[in-house]
Image: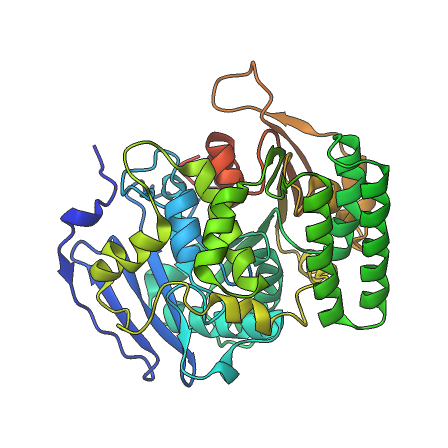
Length: 458
């Protein structure tokens, strides 16, 4: 029986790669894992971690895929959160994850943008200020990794994103296509998948009040206040006052939290873990951006924690994992610059990326949208609203299609979700899942990613 990698039993073999002075990488002795830094710009260092699947199926007609996972935030770590909390081979207790996406694909995690997770900059001026700048750095990373490895080039790459990562995914998709067409990047783009993604902030903030009113979490007064701030945000976006819109978004979240008695923005059926969050916020003593990041961590951790240890992600990534990786500079703390990442992107945070989705669809790229039913921050109601705004020529036919019910494995007794598709647009409604779909509904999420990637293991 094939074994998943067990962290504590791996013996390391150091492989230093210098490609134009930009890449430094380590790998395990059996080649199942490789990780390192790419200097995407002078003094700007992006960390990546590649897992090669032990479940790989060799099928000439169906090449084995690679999933590039992009986390949200902005400033949340894919190497930490996506890997250990959601889809990687091991959970935060370093136990094998039965629902790891390695069963369907190889997995490439990155800490993006620079300053996120283990990634770091040597000068604050080097933090990215736009999604496009982040995509340019990611494209540089892909060029350095794929152009030097023919094995990687044979596998189609699927960009799968969560939350704010969706904005990075669509800008990266377009940037990568441009680099491929120019002959600068040797890569096959398989598709882009947007999980509970912050594609149209305006549509999401307008969804919160009515949705929570229908769920009895807001009264008429709360609804009126919510809609009033949402209208202000809309006007600020129209006037190009994007930083002000981000400030208003922060105000709206506070109003929603107070008027709903602290609804969980990542699962509207629950209350926010306010005690844990308060403890984290006091300990961090940082500005609102860092508080948002800690709340993001806390919300996910509360869904994935199991008995037998604390499973704390900060302790894990700054302890045993940092020791294993060997390559992380001593003065770099995992997540230490994440607050700055959010701050520097404040001018882009509320900008929509619907046009980029349209461009990808027009270019024939497979675009998948998936959303958890009980997510609030990137609600299905908001996602449905921005999908209806697409100018893609196939939208009318897409909207006319009936949805197909989804089940898990051979069990047809419980509906797990729905799928609607036409040509290269796919929309998955995942029932009983919040913001973190792979954690809340691991079985249907695994089957979904198998379908998205057309994995030969499906």
